[in-house]
Amino acid sequence: MGLRSLYEIIKQDLRTPWRNDPAIRYKLELLFNYPGVWALINYRIANRLYKRGWKLIARIIMGITQIITNVDIHPAATIGRRVFIDHATGVVIGETAVVEDDVLIYQGVTLGGVSLDRGVKRHPTVRRGAVIGGGAKVLGNIEIGENARIGANSVVIKSVPPNCTAVGIPARVISKGKDKEQLSHNKIPDINKQLFLYLAKRIEILENAIINHDENIIIEKDKELEKLYEKYLSTMK
Image (cartoon, rainbow, N blue to C red):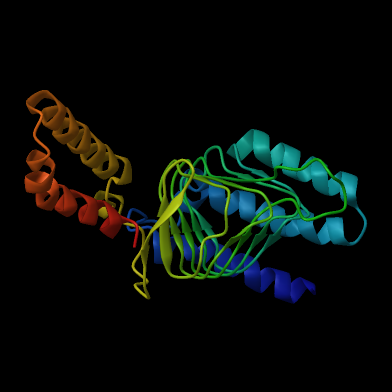
């Protein structure tokens, strides 16, 4: 990658907030309010140096960047074009992580490893157009598919297919489809709540049947219970 190509990528980094953040109004804000942009620009330079064998200098650059921006990106990571790290505080991107073009990452996200083995891929691959919600932890050599969405504070330890939304600890896929809208956390169903409602109702029905010595209670309430169970299953599709 020549200097001209590097310059073009950095120009795209500087333009990306205008496309992704409705809060930006002035160019001067890029200097003071977008640590994720500056962390990425410093990464571009450090990554170039790292690939050319200047690994210690690259690590020093990113160490200083971490102190200034509170964003920790290993210079060996692979990050594509037009990636936007919104707010950016506390973001960690590991050595063997791969982040493709047009990915949106919110504050507190970790693309981390679960292995201490050297020379192997230990970190996630995030495909084009994915959105990783604030505080999410994506761990291990797994893949987040194209246009997939990860809910805030989720812990992802298994691959997520393209065009899917995953939430929870551990994260579960709750919706599938080709909807490319960005993650709307206010529309995410509460998986645990639906399951707890179903289990609580089932226990209540069984207790009533035992107390009244009447098995017909179970039969009568089965339809009501079936609706709760179907609602739970629908959140998992």
